[in-house]
Length: 270
Image: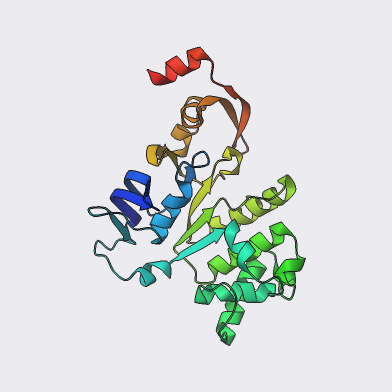
């Protein structure tokens, strides 16, 4: 297997509205991608296409983990972890941290089955790995927003996924909490799990990211290696405003952003 995800000629509709158009994209081994775009660009729909929640219309194809045939979706999902801020709102506030993590084995929101001793031990391992073992017996409704997000990360890792999708995982986090979460993610560089990180905040793109895909109006605007994609001119086109940025400590930071002048608009149209 030399690729994880392969999408060909994918047009996707949601509630009779086209949300993705002409998607062609491959994620290969040893690649970690950031998917970047403004709100409404199609980022979440793109993740749902990868996860199999949205299906392309006739002619479009999504394939997983080197298998050119369309095998059972359940088999692919067992190899994919998913972290989203939306998950956090769906758990009962009384659910213990360790039970949130264990629920990842059953892909459930809440724990409704008896977990085995091995599953409990695996959940404890990942909580220890991420530095949140102390939250095991804390109800998720009584811990901080950032701590709950790290618990959801452990939940996604219990099946040792080949691919981890992070759909705007820092949404709602303040700056210190966001930085702590991003530092936690850096530990994943030591594992075999590859990442797709969805964001519209450039400073969240970590050094472990190898490639960047820009989505705009439901289409792939451009894609390539991180160093080639993360430039002021590229970001200015994607976000339709003038952007300048700098690289520091392996991350990229926007130093200036302003509405396009008439000269900028003419330049980007040509």
